[in-house]
Image (cartoon, rainbow, N blue to C red; front, side, top):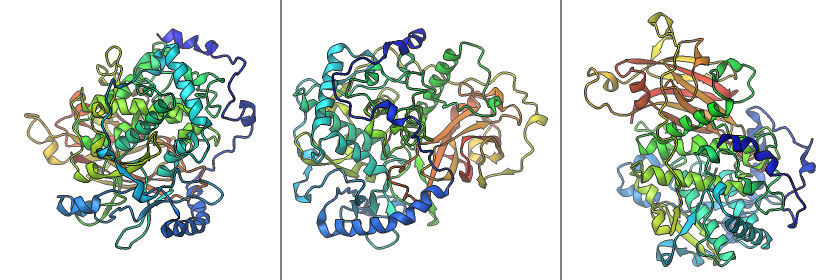
Length: 598
Ligand code: C2O
C-alpha cells in the first residue's frame, strides 16, 4: 500500500489541458509568496484599519441593503434551559447577526429577502436511492468524470449566482473571517461570529457541504451524486487524492504546498524544527512510522468519551462561568485533529498563496470539500459505530443557518435537522475496517520514571499565564481533583481532562503538544504512538485575505486523560507532570491549565 504512494508522483505528470484552468498558472506563484506577517500585532493592527470600512458596511446591512442572516434560538431556548446563564450574555438573533461585505473586497455569499426563506423541515425528504459518498482514492473513471463535469459547471456559473463556486466558497470565508458580527440585543460590545472553536463546527460544516453536494448533483441531473471523501484515516488514503491533482481538471488548484502535494500526510505536522531531538527515533521505515503516528493520532481524536471533548463547547461568543466570568470557547477533537492537519499539510501558513492553509481561502480549493466530507464521516462514525452521544444542549439543536439550495432557495436549517445522515439522504461507502480503532497508544519504552527523575515543579491546581516560545518546553505539575484519584483505584472513575486555556492570534498557525508524566529531558522518547502523548492543540489561521481585522481568540482545549492514565498506571496519582512542547506557538499565551472532571 505504502509503496504505491511512492510511485504516485510519476502518475500525475501534466498533460495537455482540455479544460480552462480556474486558477493562476503555477509559474505565477513562484517567488511571489508574500511572507505572512509574523507576530501578534498582525491581526490587531489591521483591525483598526478595517473598523471604519466595516462600520460603513454594517449600516448598509442594517438599512436592509442585504446580507445573509444567521439566527440561533438561544434567546428562546435559554429561557427554559438549565444553562441559561452561560449563553445569555450574547443572545444571537436574525436581526443582529448580518454578513458584512468589505467594499471593493469580499462580497457576502448571497443576498436574500428574509420573506423568501423556507424552513428545511417543511421541505420534502429525499426519496429514491441515497447519495453515496465514496473514498476519493477509490473512485472509478465514471465517478471522476461526473464530479469533474459538475464542478466545471458550477465554476462556469456567473459569479452572482448563489450556486456558483465563487459564492459557495465565499460562504466559508464569511463564517470564519469576521464577516458576521454578533451584536448583543440588549447592547454590549459587538463580537465576531465564527463556526470554528465550538460545537457548531460539526453541524455547520455538515450543512455547508450537504447543500454544496445537492447543487453539484442538480447541475448534472444526478440525485445520487455523492461528495467523495478524502480518506486520510486509512493508509491508502494518506496522500492527497489523485483526482485533485490533474491540471486539466476543475478539481485542480495550483495554490497548494508543492512540497507536500504528493507526499504521505503527516497528521502530526512534524515541522522541520531546529531541534530534531523532540522527535522519537523511527526504527522502521520512515513511512511506516508516519502511518503509525497518523493512526495513533486518529485514535486519540476519536477515543474521547464525552460530547464536549469531541464537538467542543457552546457556540456562544462568550460563555460565562458560574461566577459570571467570561470563559474561553472550547474546540473539539474532531476539529483540532486530522482536520486541521489536512489544512496545514496542503497549505503552508507561511505562504499567502496556499489556499488550504487559511480558513478564509480554504474553500477555494476543491479538496476542501473532500476533507470535510471525511470530517463529517468521522462524526457519523463516532455518533453511530462508536456510540458517541449528541451534545445535550437544547440551544445547539435549535441553532440555525441559512444556505441556498439547488433551486436557489434560501433554506433555514437547524442543527436538529442534520443529525441523521439517513434522513438527509446520503450514506458513506465504507471499505474494510477502521484501521485506527486498534491503535491505542502504548507507554513509551526507555523512560526513567524513578521519583527523583520526576520534575520538581511547584504543585498547583491551576497554572496561569505562560507565554510560549518555540523550542522552549514548559513544565508544570498540576494537582488532580481529589475525586479523580481518591478511592484506591476501585470502581469506575469519572472521565477527566487537562483543560488548557489559550489566547492566540487568529492570523497565526498554532501547534503545541502536551505530554504527561515525562521527566524533563526525556521528551524526545515520546511521540503520538505513546500513551504519554496526550495530544496536540492545532489552529488554522484565519483572515489573511481579509487583511486582518480579527481580535485575539480565546479558546480552550481538553486533553483527554482517562485512557492515558490507565495506560500509564497513574490512576491513583494526585498530581501529574505536564510538558507543553511548542511546535509553532511563539507568543501564544496559556492563560490557565488545570485538570477537570468531565
Ligand atoms: Cu471551516 Cu476545515 O474548516
